[in-house]
Length: 485
Image (cartoon, rainbow, N blue to C red):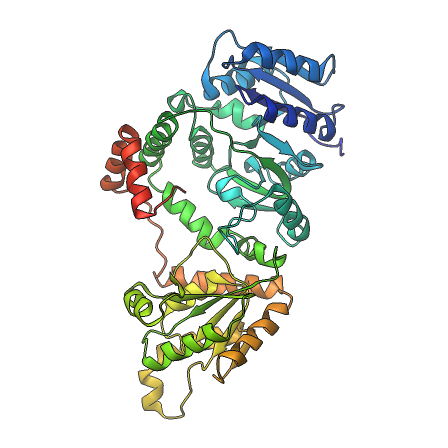
């Protein structure tokens, strides 16, 4: 551990969940250099306060690196953090707010402090985790239905962390592991009590300091596992989330657009497709993108491919929303997805026929790190053809620039063989970045990807309704299949 850096006070807010707290303290004992840093355990008088206090004191004993405090009454998460940082910690150290249901991995704090020290405009640093919304690693999954085990995140992070940039600027940092430059606290205070007892307070802090020119970043090489236990039972949690989201959007109308822009453009391409760098099964997952016109010949080709695909080649057919009904009718039993930017990534994306619109190209870009083109646009020397098809030809030139393989249609079995061969090829991070940035930049420059800087009255009204009627909202989401972010 490096001692040539600013010291940190690690503040662990405590409420309940004794097993998680025990794991967190044990991990801190193993990972913190107490010659440099200290830990402040702030007990917020939860339902089992005495039992938790007794166990905490057993774990830390007379360890000089730990300080334990118990609030005179329950203050809520926001109040507990504010009291610990603003009143109790008088060291002048930078501050790490660390949830009690986390397990930090070795070297996490040295890495986070190195990122913080790398640029004076960085105000907040967050680690990566198995459970931390936009800081989750991986964020998009090859198989979203499978349970993401902490072991999987550790293996994948170990495989890819040095392929990633050391840090990535993000709209906000996640509060589970929230390293704050002390200057930010001195200038801006900490959490706004309007977000008491919790939810949204860290987002407000990040956006507040950003308005003054300071950034929040993800430390891509630091890993902290996070159980994500819920502090608010019943309807209270959903109500707080929705109500506080409304406050955030009223204060920062661009916030939703900033998150969308981050996901669509500012993440590193290795981060986008991280789950494909170390597959957790022997299955090849392939997205087959269909052309704009679903002719009988296209449907027949897809059927042939599906019939030829063995169990270890899992095919998802990607179509435009306008094609969904035709595809379902012509491909009964097939897995069909509407093109766009889903929370799933694939090992290989196949363009089955000419892709002639930029939204199709953008969907292909978001789906997989490897491309196979089947019967791409046919070029003709006649100017009449060139003029009529110049847009499709331009898209084809982009496709060919970044393709991994081109082929003509020779049947489903032949395409399955090419898919397998392509999936075995190593992913070139530099080439992947070039493709990701080129296509994303074109999409935004041409207005095909729009990230709004305003929020609609309709959305604010919906959030207000949801905060007051969380059970109704939950039932509607269950019926429509729309889960939370």
